[in-house]
Length: 257
Image (cartoon, rainbow, N blue to C red; front, top):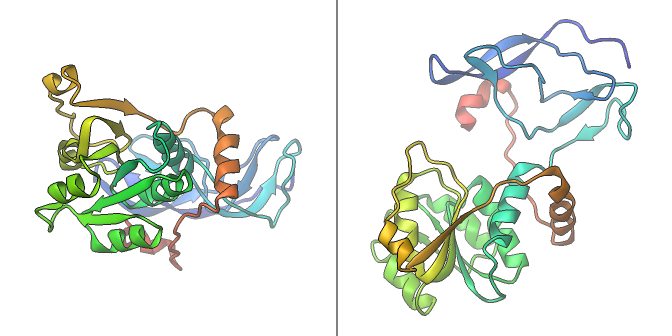
């Protein structure tokens, strides 16, 4: 391994006591023999109520362990990680046929990837969000229709008309309880509610709706490492790309979030 890096670096950290993100000085971590270290990731162990945020980082390799293969100092590296995997598996897990309808509820980080995966699987896609900018992005990515669920009071009936009865599945990428409450209204009878986003409060499910087959519920996460090759190969084949916004200074972190 190259000589250890000394000193400290800046890191954006979540302070649980203050419920806020702050920029702090932290020691530069050292990588083990089978690891590499790159700017953009601290690799430090969480200390109490303060933890460095983020886990899908990009950066430049600055140190390489003696047993780490395939990378050298100066290489640019990035992560095709759980955001891609989660979006892919959640759409695939709906088990839809070509030309069937899926509603993507929440068209931001995971949702904009899900739209790309759904279109690559030849599904018809409806994007639902409360932000017009996200909906425009969804349209640009190929969504067949988009609706602002906050301003369009008739969106549910419009979806039922457009899809001849409702979507075959609705995948919720939002962490909003309201999004989960309203998503089943977009489904046809026995449609599938795919749980992805994690809301702060517990979900409220009508047991009778499930019992009578009004709709079904499933959930998908990023999966296990053995499932990643499938995601990587599909993403490469269909040119699935994440929208990335860069900021020049780590102190812009609160503007970003």
